Length: 178
Image (spheres, helix red, strand yellow):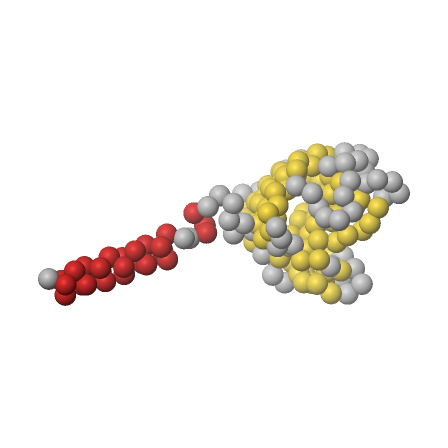
């Protein structure tokens, strides 16, 4: 009888261990920060696995300038500009009252640098950051939502570009300081 019970316990233990290991898929959780890293423009989706954060310091008052680049694999850290390469990217010039970090919240388009403002946005396609050649279209309006949890950041954005088109996207992960 005890041998049968031992076998039953063993089977139950194996099933329990298997269910624990397979049920802990972080992609099932809304706060996993392992979501998409892409933007969509004219019905085409572009992968932007890299996320870079550049601290440009204060804007002469209480507002701090944080620049975010979401880039394709071929654009990396380097050179005096901070990033280098040829590829696709989204650039967001975000301003907030914190000099310590980019704060979570909703950033709105603004002609002036104020708390939680987006003052410049650009979409680049097959763009060479060394020679400034390729397609780069500036935004004329937009919103950005930033969520943070520890070192992880989720960025959701909608930009209205100067050609009248819209680019939308989402990026989740750890922004790399440049």
